[in-house]
Length: 349
Image (cartoon, rainbow, N blue to C red; front, side):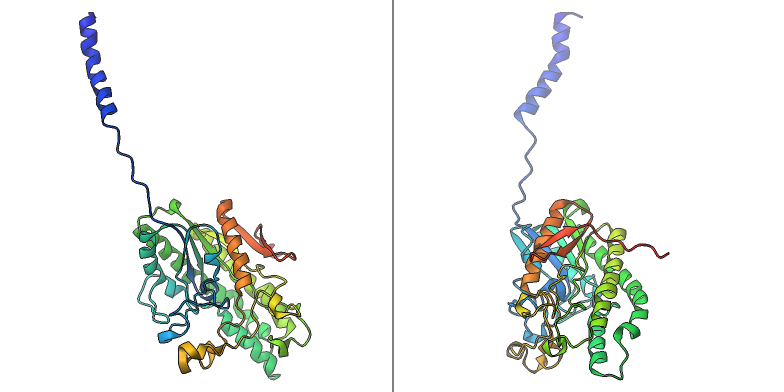
C-alpha cells in the first residue's frame, strides 16, 4: 500500500480520536442529597422508654408513637441524617403498603419512598413483629396477672405451648413488610445493592436474675416466668425473624441479649439498668389528656431506655460497617455491647 493510501486509511481514526478528545463524556452529577439512615417498626425502634419524644408523638391528637430523640437510629454514626418512621404499637401491616392507619399515621413503607427520594439512604433498619401474633405485650400482661392472682397458672404454662404457632404466624406478616420496604426503596430509585437493609429482633427486658422483692420494685412477675421469657420466648421470636431475613436477603441483627445483665430489676439501682421497670408517666396527661388514662400512662414500661439505645445504635453501626450477613449484639459486663456470632439452637435429638 502506498504512503498516501496509508494516510487516508488512518485519517478516520485520527479524526475520531480528535473528536473524542474535544468532547469528553459528560461527568455524572454528584448526588448532593444528605446521606441518611432510616428506622421503621414499632416501639422498640421508635424509642419508647428512652424519653424526650418528638412533639406530636407524645399523645397529641391521639398520636402515641413516642419517637425518641435518643432512639438507636440517631446513634448509629452511619450517616449525617437519621429519620425515624417507627411508631409505638405498630405491627407488620402498619409498616407494609396498604390502608392501615395507626395513631393517625399511615403506611411506613409509603412514607419511606419520600424520605428515600429526598435523602441518599444508605441504611434501613426494620424492627417489627412483637405486636403481631407474637403478642409480647399481651404475654407480659398475662405473666403479671398470673403472679398477682394465685388462681391463674404461670404464663409459661398457658402461653408456652402456643409459642411455636404464634411465631410461625408472625413470620409471613413480617416477611410481607420486609418485601414492601424493599419495594419502596425500588420505587424511590434504589437497587437492592445501594443500601443495607437490617432486620432486628428484640432485647429481652426480663430475667430470672432479679433483686429480692422484685414485685414491689417494679417487676411483678415470677422469676420462673421471667426466665422462660428470656430463654424461650424472645429467642423464639428472634429465630422466626432470622428466617425472614434469610428468605428476603435482609441482614439480621439479633438483639435478644443486647441488654443482658441490665434487664429490669436486675440491679439494686434502677438507674444502672437498660430496661425500664413498670413506669408510670403522669406527663402523658399533659399531651394526651384523659386518653392517657390506662395503657398510655405506663406505655414506657419494659422498654429499652436511652442507655440501651446508645449501645444498640453503636452495635448497628458496627454491624453495617462489618458487611456481615448476621450477628448478635450482646451486652458485656463492662457496660458496652459488642457483636458476636448468632447462636443457632442445636437440632433436637
